[in-house]
Length: 94
Length: 348
Image 1 (cartoon, one colour):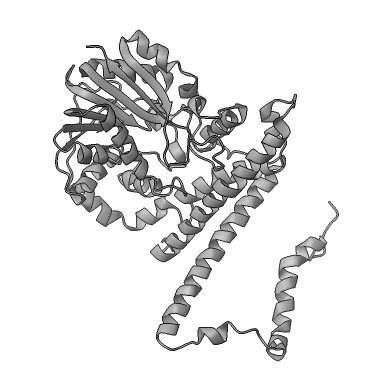
Image 2: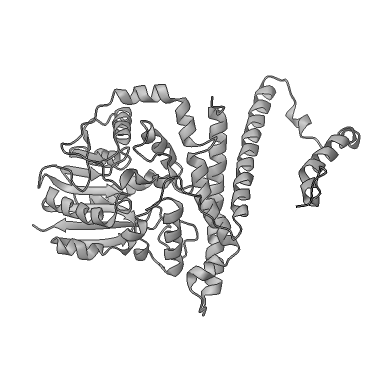
């Protein structure tokens, strides 16, 4: 007989992967919720003539991309810097 | 205060349904294909082969957690219904369902959250609504409610009942097809869960079905009149019962049937499926654990035919059931429940 609210089932050899899968799927759900919201906003704004979706879908010109390069680089660094394994604070040796 | 809104809920649930469809049509077939490639001449037991497949933990994780996310968490069925509590409770307050004398909830029933439904089917007044909404997306490839009509038509080919008892009726999803197909019959439906029974009456009213009598009763000890029915049926109840209750259910069915009456049950039995093998049994056993179904395996191991024979039933058959036109093809590639029909007749 299962015990209510017992520890969650584990499927991977390393239980950390189970938990990371949970985080990843929760984030994927949030992304899809945002996509749906954005689609709804675009539809309503288009219907009211406030935005031109065709224009929004055009490839962005290099000059325009360049204006946001710093933001892009900061975004990339935020997402990928954990891969480097470097501490961001002075600490003690474990 | 909850931040969920109905649009975000529907988008999140749609994503989860899409993920379940991917699991059903991409992950499971790949696992099956790889198992078949490895199985030929293999000396390693099937469970070891499958568990050593890199895909398997992802397959198992998705089965477990897509269900969890469907019911619980920020965009789950339970929190959404919480935001609608006053209106939903008001709708149920108008429904009156009697409880049979000497009714008692079996101890096993509230001891776990079936289907990962938080609180189970009796833990909250809105449990029926949550369960009903969840049942709409149980199987991403089939309209889950169609199979109830398929089952009812199959029963109709066997008999034209005049007094029907549908046990473990839940929110009436199995009962309404019987009430519609056999409009002249007296229909009684029972369940342990009062929230589900009240929702059943509420949904019946929406479909102008007025001739179903709902009762809160234990299917294994209904207290109803002996010989009062010519059909005792259930849908997806057998696998919810511990072995002792499973045995009692058929004793009760025999008691309630008139001579010549039929007992017919739609449930899950992997051993009668076309092409059943060690892999399909392993997958089914894993599903039972991952979906909080503690009695699915004991049903699969139970000697139904022997038990029915011992009770004096005749015309016993246990056959696979096709929930869609392709489902029983030996090479059907997608994940499916091992649907089966158990039927028997009380001797004249």
